[in-house]
Amino acid sequence: MRHMPSILNRDQHNRPGGPLRLHVVLESNMQSINEAASVVIRFAKKHRYGKQPCHEIELAVREAVANAVLHGNCCDAGKKVFLTAAMQPSGLVVCIRDEGKGFDPESVPDPLVPGNLMQESGRGLFLVRAYMDEVIWRPAAEGGMEIWLTKYPAKRP
Image (tube, rainbow, N blue to C red; front, side, top):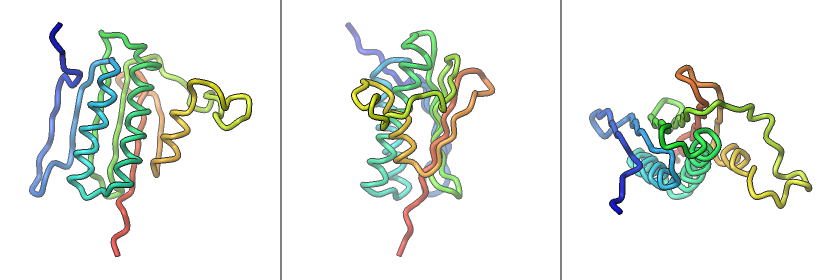
């Protein structure tokens, strides 16, 4: 069986000094998680994000794309995950959008409550919030749900 790439479309808008914006369309499968994390980390490294911030960005992107594939699109091959990354004055901003029905992030149980500690799922949103500087969930204008992740640049001495 021939491997089909999960990244269906990649568009980088270049500026002097490197691309400032990245747009990727992903299939709704588990392979997309690794591919999304890889492309965002390469983008972050080009914009001088170090080892620790890149680790945090990678973890947050993996969790957000996994949620988009599994919970948003329910692994439906007919649906896509849309990822953009851009360098803004505030830092690296990543948006991940699915084509699902959406959800209320406040309805997700707190994974730190003793009764939820052993649950197999429910930690993703907690980890995303912990590792990113700003996190916003909202219904997407195009349908589905989108999450906006911002990682501030490291302070330079």
